[in-house]
Length: 617
Image: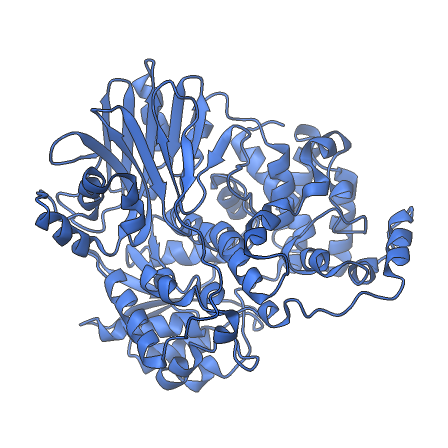
C-alpha cells in the first residue's frame, strides 16, 4: 500500500515543493520514497512494502522505458495476467504486480483497468506520446483525487498534498452541505473547492495544454438480472475461498480484524485453511457492555486456534481526538473511524496487512433496511396540511421530527430517517437552514441536499425497491463511507487492509442477482448463512445484527466535551459557516440529556478539522 502523487505540467515546477507535497503522504508508505521527473513531469511514491520487497520500488519503468507508473494498491490476479503477457512476448524484471500493470497498459491500453482484479489507483506517464493515464478500482477501495492549478494538473492519492500548495485552502459550500448530510463528501467533490475526487470505476486521460483530465466510467454496479440463479452453497464457498486465498498473498505478516460477526468470522475460517501457522486475529474490546463483542470474537478464535490479540479500546481523550480529526485529508464524520483507527494502530505493531469484512452487508444484503425498502408505513391522513403547518411554526416543538417524517412521501422519508443527517427539513435538529449561517445557505444549495444520492439511485429505476437501494448503497454508503473510513483509519497507521468480500470473483457472481435471491423469507444474508451455520459457532450467527457502535452523545457530553466547546468557541470567531447559537443550544441539551449525536458531532468535526488545516470559506 502506498501514497502516490503526479505533477503534470508545461512549466517549471520547483522540486522542493513537489517533494514537500510527497512527504505529506509518508504515513501511507513509510518504508521507502521514490521520485522521477522528466520534461516537466514529476512522479512521486511513498511505499509500504508488501510484495516483491527488493525489486518492487517505484516510480517504475516499463521494459522498453516508454512508460512510468506510480501505483497504490494490490492486484490479486497479477500472476495470471503476467503469464498471459509473457505468452505475448512481454519481459519482466521484477516479481511485482506494479510491472504487470505497466506491461498490461503497453499491450492493452486503457482497457487494462477492466482486466485488473484488486484494489488500485495509479498514474502512468507515456514519455513518447506525452499522455497521462490513470484509473481507480471498481468500488473505490483506493482513493485518487486531482486538481488543475494554472497549467499544472496535480494527481494524488489523497488531499494532504494540497495543504502544502497555495491556492487550495478555500472550502466548497456544497461540500459542507454534503458533509453535514451524509457524514462524507461524495465524489467528485471534495471539501476543498478546487480539488476533485476521481469516481470509483473511472479512468482518465490528460495531454499537456488540454486543461482538465478527460474522465470516463468503465464500470458500474450491474442491474438486477431476474434470470440469474444464485450460487449453491458449495459454489459460493469455493469463490470466497479463492478470494481469501489470493488476498493472503504477501511477503510480510498478515492478520485479520475479527469482530465476532458472520463476515469477519467466515474470513477467519477460510484463512485457517490456507495458513501453515495460526491465523493472527485482532479484536477491539469496549468498556460499554452494549457494544462489546470481544467475548464472541474470543470464541471464534478458540474454534480456529488463532493467534488472538484483544486490544482494549484506548480511552481517546480530547487531545488525541483533535489530533486524529486534524490529520484527515478531509473531514469525515462516521464516528466509527475513531475506534477503527485505534484498532489499526495497535494491529500495526504486529502485522503490516490485515483482512476485514467490509462489503459483505452491501453485496449479500445485511442491513435491516433492505427488508422494508418500499414497504414503509403510509403517509398520515391530511399529511400535506400537517406538513405545511409544522413548517410554518415559528418554533420547533421537541419530538416534532418523528411526526414530520410520517408526513413525507416514501422517498423523502427514506432520506429523513435513514440516509441523511441533515436536509431541507424545517423541523428541529435535522434542518440545514437552521444549521448553516445565512450567508452560506444560498451557496450551499440546501434544496438539492439529496441530489448526490439520487444521482446514483436513478439509473437503476424510478421505484425505490430493495434492488435499487442495494445498488445505490454500493456507490454511496459503501464506496464513500465504509471504504473511505477503512482506508483513512488504517493508512494513518501505515496498515494495509484488504477486503475479500469485494473481490471480483465474488462481485461478478453475486452482484447481478435479484434481491429475492439474497433475502429469502425475510432472512438477511441468506446466501452466507448456511455456510456460517456449518463453519462457525452458533453464538456468531444466531443473534441479531450488531454494528460497530460508539455511544456518541455520552462521549460528547463526557470525555469529548472539551473538543466540542473549543470547536464552537474557535468556529464562532474564525469559521462563519454555522449558526453557532443553534449549535450551542444542541450542546446544552446534550449536556443535560445526552440525546444529541451526529447533529452536533458533524459540525464539530468540520470545525476541528478546519482549525488544524488553516482553511477559509
